[in-house]
View: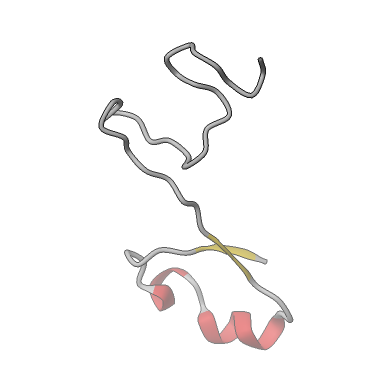
Length: 61
């Protein structure tokens, strides 16, 4: 099973922790490393984007 990881979630409210632990051998906690840059304050970006939003060099070139 894959469950979301966050410090904002009350675990037992959203996930039945004891039931999950009793019935599964493995649980992947899905977390993502995202940030908001100073140059683009209204968009969330990955730490190593594959394309440059300014149109300069990217991994496709």
